[in-house]
Image (cartoon, rainbow, N blue to C red):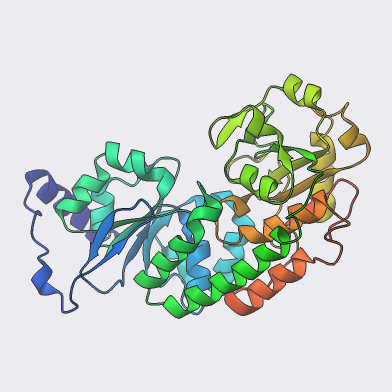
Length: 385
């Protein structure tokens, strides 16, 4: 089988190089009439076949597939970025236990879009390639999109990362359309809207916005302090009723603050992100969060991180207003769970009756094929609820 795939890939690569694959997949061979959709990059994409084989440019798109097709979420996936496994090993293993065949899906490094390569993409014979919006510039500059267009393989962009609140609804609708799961997509979006409103409705007249220092992937790298600007977790903090420190210094979605900036700002609350990153670093001080994560080990890591120069003198550390949350919330459609959890940390009295964990349990029961396991957040004071 491996020899066949290698030969097939080489054959396709030679045909591609010679320009012989152009036009070899005419619209007429497909029984289903061509249709068009507008993706999240505002591109009109022609879909002229049933979608039975999907290439995911980012492995974390698996989170969306799990909620839209819970019984057979990955049966149509012919390849994906390895970051589903590397960036969330505990989550990946939970799904692997439920769907052992997913371990055989070909993967590729997801650090850059170049790692996919047009030859590899074509050899997997996908009916569609789905990419994150943040990959668009790289997909265009690498020539990947041009090569796929030559052989009539459509590319569709979605986004759960760059503009989480603005683009999630349309992205889920796009995936629901592609996968023939429009009704399920609508049901999930209704649930999502209800859960977001539980936060935003209560914050309409909020006056006090505590300042929040968010450290992205704390402990995974030696340096402090990677953070977020106005987007992503920065957006989550703002909508949860906080004042994101990074927004005052970082003009893009991601950036880095000097420890002295953190010290002088004296934030009211510190929030760090973590996950099981043992495939990235065996020796880092990152906080392992995710399904089934050990809270005692996580809290010990969090305490160690707060002894670094940027934090150890801060009053937020002394009063234990320090929290850790699952990093993969930042690029999947479940981020409204993080919104509820952060809002409750920032405004505990206002959200005394809000139970983010119960919301997450309900999400699993209604939409996901794996059972809920606690371990997605913790506090320096030892509280996990």
